[in-house]
Image 1 (cartoon, rainbow, N blue to C red):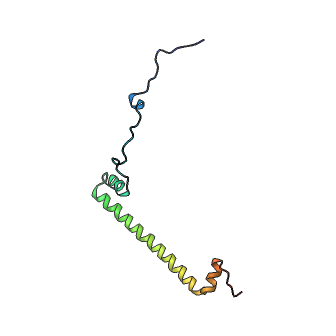
Image 2: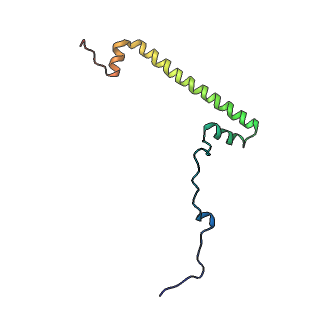
Image 3: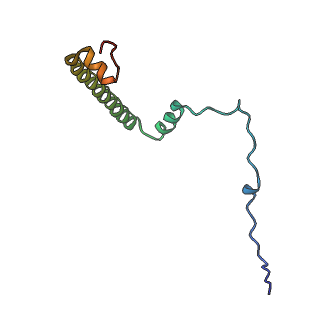
Length: 96
């Protein structure tokens, strides 16, 4: 028993076309500055200023965190001396 359907689904013309290979010289490279400008264009200048300030202060806090970690590490290493630091790194001394 076979059935035939009189209505067949046909894809729209947009699906029939294959994407055209584009010349690499005509393509605009996607850079962070381009992406930022796209998102910035959807915000008001006041919103953009607020977001920029927030990002700046987060960067300053992150830099402060890294500097404090470095300072604490250096202060802790100062008390151990050279031999203690070398032993921590697994360096074997020849004078043993």
